[in-house]
Length: 353
Image (cartoon, rainbow, N blue to C red; front, top):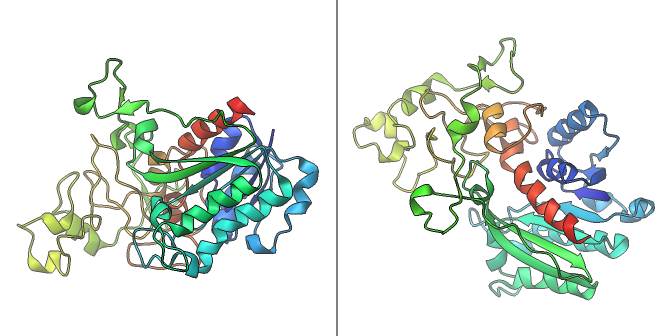
């Protein structure tokens, strides 16, 4: 069954959808580094998927009519709806990009549509200021095309991803009402009181302990994307933080180490823990290794996000306070859907097609 990927990023949805048995005929992504990562992945797997590096608004969906698309999927930019930020909703052009999904659906009428976004979309205001108004328009337009939309906030950790990551998923099926979201397979052992116990949460330690020591930037890289770019000053500051903790809560740390951090800065200078799932990976604040005084490497980000070991990222590796043009490697991963979660959703969609 053919699929079309829009707002592809570095391919979290693409990889999961393909693993579930679909074939992506094309992936559309505007960011040069993310598109390059996707090209490497498809090339290494002998896949002829066309990676189109362009603004989605420049693409005529009718060019894909001959491919008889069964599944349209993508994660439109979510900054306009995020709970972190200004939340300009539909006043932000990036918010309008959500409705590119509708434009493609009108032309291609795929049997199913899969969309990922932040949970803040559910409460985002429309142009009149009505709370939740931005989201109400989207399923209504899907219904007008003959789709039956369903949506659910899913925490990735409940489905075997070693990361607490809540995201909104929307699945719309054309004229069929048989879709059901996957049920949780994992749980916190101490909180699991069900008659049939679920598997314990996957942890950071479960997925990164087999990696060798990372290389420093400028050295010959022994393991793809396993690069440590931590500045000496950041190493000094994180040395005061215990495993699983964050710097702002360390009362014994000197003032020149704490600097301007407040009690609210719980994700800044944050260590992960070998025995716990990670918090939601973010591009702006790179989390630290559980015991070593360094950032998690892009490879460790990939492992926590359930990317295959053979996946390789293209583009620069940015330090915590640095900036790069387009998406750096950490941000590519943090912006994407965990492939394992994408696969589980795509398998459920495949069941009813």
